[in-house]
Image: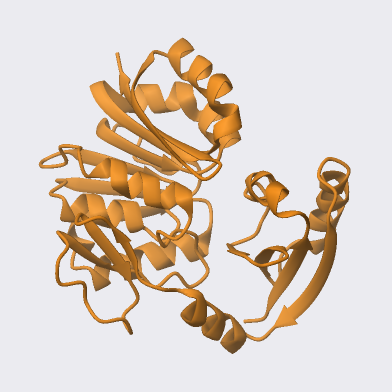
Length: 276
């Protein structure tokens, strides 16, 4: 399958802000470069709509843009050359199949990202994994909302979750999550659904919900997330710029969530919340 690479050229201090905006657009992967950000989309995507939205975005965040058509093998070579093992303390190691195993971590995860987001390299995923270390997953039912590669759901299953439901709007993410669950020996503890939050089993109540998406999706979903979360249950969120901290925490408090802890890495925020 062909892919398109959009190279956004802009000052380094603007890249995190641009990345937050781009996460709402139909790109399946991002790469930070020396000159800005490279974003990838499938050749068959709605380019006309995307181009129109990029014109509007450039009025808010000025950037220069180039476009390149890539063969599928170029994409595979790209992620293999850029995907280096990630260590989250002694808790978790994240690697591809062609990397040697981590010998001194509790969880050695094998993730092949393909065309889905989430390898541990980005600050948001790193913080989510780090915050998961202190959670009691044993016997819990868990929702991975916006699962991407499935890294968080797979880790939850390895931590002893009784069952994990994972949802994502992208077909590539659904396929990738199933593959990564099998790679890590947890396919019998996890189901994946394509769609938004309504794609999750309607009657399910979760003890833990993991949501590493973006600010707008999380804020819009707060009422539904509260309904799906058990009283006293935990909601982990990220994909939020630290500059939006006050806005997000005001909204979560309004919807009945109590802030337990938070973390910041680069320009990004992650938080552990509890349903009152």
